[in-house]
Image (cartoon, rainbow, N blue to C red; front, side, top):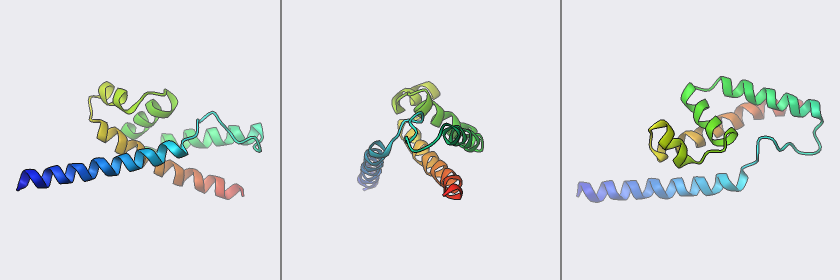
Length: 112
């Protein structure tokens, strides 16, 4: 019975991660892409705000985020490089993006 429960739990987690990944890929924007309605000064401010927000992250979260979105490595590559599971990479990427979105939302909201 324990094996069945473990299997079902793992299947549910994997299915949830698949949904999260599919949603993320639909909304991902390159960090260098800035909407054309922003001035160069605003783009610079936004990049600086992102750098400050990343600097506030725990070291491992900042490292994984940087490897994923700035260096362009895939989750499996990051997992192999850091010696951790792909699931941990995916969860960390998701949580870090949520945290950065919240932090940058405060900054962007203040400008509007």
